[in-house]
Length: 431
Ligand SMILES: Nc1ncnc2c1ncn2[C@@H]1O[C@H](COP(=O)(O)OP(=O)(O)O)[C@@H](O)[C@H]1O
Ligand SMILES: [Mg+2]
Image 1 (tube, protein in one colour):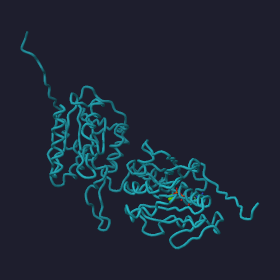
Image 2 (tube, protein in one colour; image 1 turned 180 degrees about the vertical axis):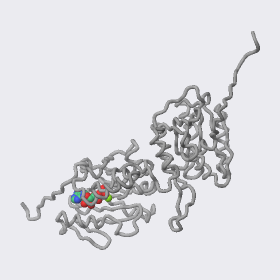
Image 3 (tube, rainbow, N blue to C red; image 1 turned 90 degrees about the vertical axis):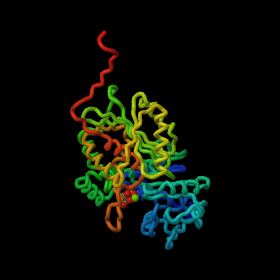
Image 4 (cartoon, protein in one colour; image 1 turned 120 degrees about the vertical axis):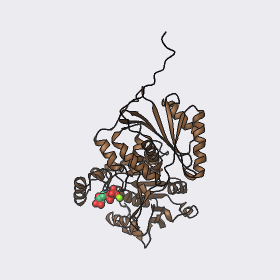
């Protein structure tokens, strides 16, 4: 045996086993303390020993300083694994066997030009990947183009709509993607200090516990307008499977996205007003699809013009108005009865929020068909000016279309008066 021969012994948590084989995209998501960072750090060092002269980049969406990077963790691992003679930790990088390198960067510092500097890199490890923007992901993926290059992602999921979740967990992951979920109970080295933190969190902050420690999507967002209303509805069993009532009319409440990048974003809530209750039986949203796609969905699900009527918002901005008018006429010519709800003017968004809050105790919502809409309602939140600590009104993000359409329903809803109108059709007197 040669003097340099040495076996690197890296005990690894079983949960990460699927990630040990070559794959284009590797993901590990889960709650705090599950060993994600330690696992990828060890695998990166192992890969640099296996493949001399390889170059890698450790990435975050935002990296204000190296302290935020995985550099320190990697250095500790190099020590622990007893391979310090193979690596040279410098101020801003780690030199690896065969004059390879590991560097540390923030995606927000990159442009479409500068990202090209990473083209020869074989590994990119994105930490806290839940914050990775769609732009960053689009820049990064084609940049790593070496044969056998791999992109790694570790994250604690926030919402289904985060780009990394869409990529790995929406059911249409790219070829060569392998993903595992890991939580504290999968970590054989879960330290006792973290166990105490976990217990405290479970006892004192149960609303956030499942996100922080069990890796579930966020259900409670700071400043979320409808958080407590959704919680109440869940607790009361009003978020459950519902059936369409064949005798009741079907009401479709629309929000049509504006211009630019959000063009053609469309959300529709499908509801039936049954006595005192609002039964929300379905939800639809689409990005960048033509009106015909929305109509096809409606018809395919039994909400065609023979059964359903539409409510559209009357939007303020001129270009949106043109947009809305074209929807209105297109829906009418498809046979729908259309009501355009006048704009409530200044403060319209907050009026809708208040109307939703008033309506919510009457709402029953289908837990499966409305899943995406429920996420939007749970996420819709106030934008904060962090420096001045003041609220800036609703944050206009992916959730605002769904929330606005729901708000339209709440504005339109009229409390039943207790009287009903009976239209009796007849054909001539007597007979
Ligand atoms: N492979 C490992 N070897 C030794 N300790 C580990 C290992 N993996 C995890 N740990 C321990 O578990 C803790 C949490 O792991 P970490 O990778 O930071 O979790 P996560 O990134 O999922 O939050 C670490 O601080 C460390 O104490
Ligand atoms: Mg981590």
